Image (cartoon, rainbow, N blue to C red; front, side, top):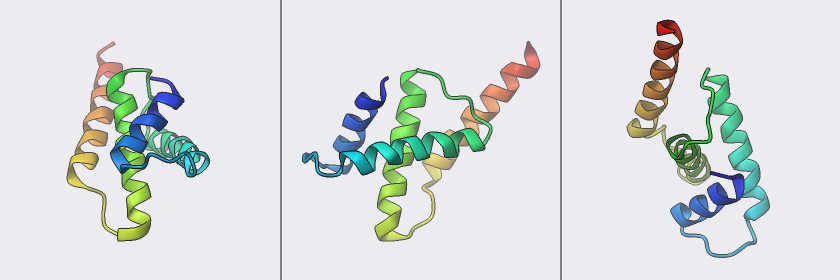
Length: 92
């Protein structure tokens, strides 16, 4: 999925139809990709990884207003993705 497609998905998730926030949301996607990489995850161009980026970016956007902790499903997805990647590397 391209960054433009992830931006579209993020806007749908956040229920934003205007283009006024596109620059900030695009930067948020880039920031989120970097945050995921810092956790040791190598992102691929898969739909699963793209949706992980979108959901993480939506959480970060909402967290600015709500100041809540990371949702359990998101932490679970990140942990599973990391464990899967590291497990595959040690098998090979």
